[in-house]
Amino acid sequence: MAGKISRIFKISELRQRIFIIALILVIFRLFAAIPIPGVDVAALEQFFGNNQLLGFLNIFSGGALANLSIVMLGLGPYITATIIMQLMTMIFPQLKALYYEEGAQGRAKFNRFSRYLTIPLSAIQGFGFLKLLSSQGVLPDVGLTATIVNVVTITAGSMILVWLGELITEQKLGNGVSLLIFAGIVSGLPSLMVNAYISYTPELLTTYIAFVLLALTVIAGIVMVNEGERKVPISYAKRIRGNRVYGGASSYLPLKVNQAGVIPIIFAISILLFPQFFGQIISAFSENIGTIVTDWVTRIFNNQLIYGIIYFVLVFAFTYFYISVTFDPREISKNLQRSGGFVPGIRPGEPTAGFLKNIISRITVFGASFLGLIAILPIIVQFLTNTPALTLGGTAILIVVSVALETSKQLDSQLTVREYEGIR
Image 1 (tube, one colour):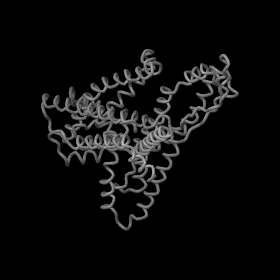
Image 2 (cartoon, rainbow, N blue to C red):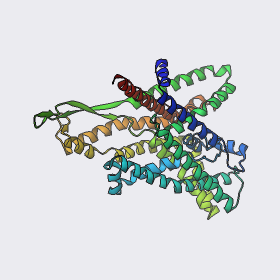
Image 3 (cartoon, helix red, strand yellow):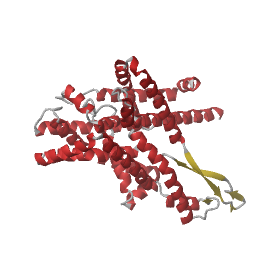
Image 4 (cartoon, rainbow, N blue to C red):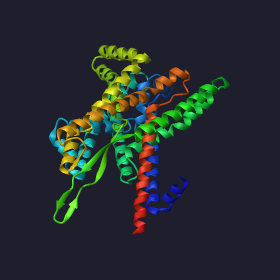
């Protein structure tokens, strides 16, 4: 590991890219520390301490939401816009052709549409948050002009983060959106360690040891599931063109156990947050109805058992839903048939599509169950330890481990390319 790091910093181009990414992450953390005007810090801390849903959403803002900073929404609106655009490929064939068939230019245009959609989503979410926080006494009840200014500021903050994420992606050392979320999660680790140290007593030694062992087990499990894949063997028929013979090779089609990543959890959190935002928006027009909706949702979600069951079921269902959108067995079967490939023992065409669909359905059962357990892991840990300082955020660990693995692979590929260039 030390040798790999020294090789990375000996290459001037890679060293420059790493410094650029580090500078962008520092800028992101500076933006996350600038709050919007009029925040009651004590009321804010109490509100977030009593609302687990917003605590989860704070993960995706990189901690900026808990500070009510000018980038309080983080990259949540952009992620939501991207998901909506992917879902729309099922409805509009033109978008599907743009995303899957027109190559890099089509993907760039598709991403541009996602950025356009981010703007209204940021404005709507920003308004909902401001109304929610105002009703809880975290923010003063300001007039329409001040609200519009705050919404515009929050929307601009989200778009700045989208731009910073794209700048990081251009360095080809990882996904910019993922690295920004990664930086936000890691930046909160020192405060968590301090709180755990302050809360420590000799009577809790066994609990702390069990917590550390559980954390290591979860990390190992995430690595195994993220790297786990079902390899479907693929053979290519021999084709003769002129005096040359093509094909005849064997390969495999990797089907990952966790193809959906953290997207189903984002889906589930969005659905769970929607009733609260809906109640706040209704309150702007009818205070009585909005209060009834908000109180009803609060009573349901304060029951940890009901909340955990709903959360797990949503994550499980959305995992299947997302994979059904992004994984098209028929399209894969057609591509294999065009290139002369086939699964040994399975006829090309519809039989191959059905075979791949059955495989992905079976492995998704394990992947969806794993994601559901990761999502409700904080509830389980709190129930077992009964110690507020020991909160094992499964979603945060999933993001951190996934981003670390992906970035490590990107660095390895960059080093491999340069080793080949050195041979030439």
